[in-house]
Length: 137
Image (cartoon, rainbow, N blue to C red; front, side, top):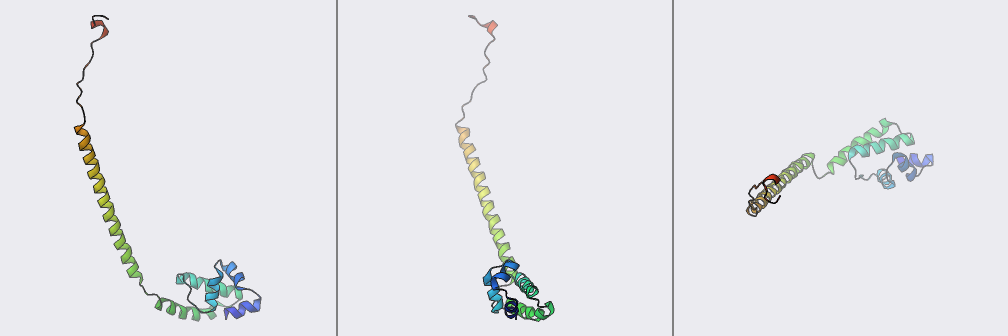
């Protein structure tokens, strides 16, 4: 329907893409009822903007958007919860690696300090006599 309305207005896919600020391939996928590889919120926005440009009322495209939403989420092989779990797991790993690095740094600094203490030479605090107390002086 969008393709027919676009053709009646004399617009090309490139014209619509420029007005919506997307690639021409996205417009082609929308017109050919293919799933656009983008978050559904964006896809829905693209379709609504496209419909507004060609003069299609929102009420007429809403039923299509509802069907598309079902199809879109049915085709997603993952759930949001699994993404959240992966992020939490990756944070634990990051903090563990950070802890190990800090421990290694602390051990390295301790060892370096221990080694340099053995190389110190003790210097006595000798104060030279004043020039008035000197014999030649």
